[in-house]
Figure 1 (cartoon, one colour):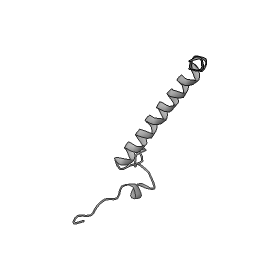
Figure 2: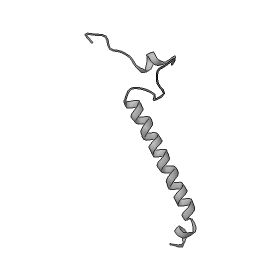
Figure 3: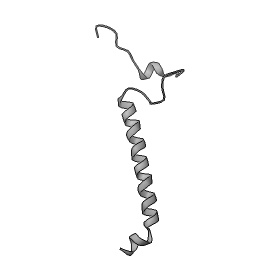
Figure 4: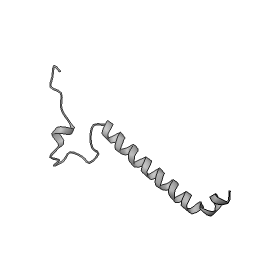
Length: 58
């Protein structure tokens, strides 16, 4: 118990960092599953690679 009391600041900061990392990764994965990189396609040289369109009949 004394370890927790002595390192409470480090534990709180570490917990906040882990939460921020989790939320960032969650957003990245969510954006990828939605079909993009999350930065938009305006003036993107790789937009043809990200969003392939299916032709009719495929």
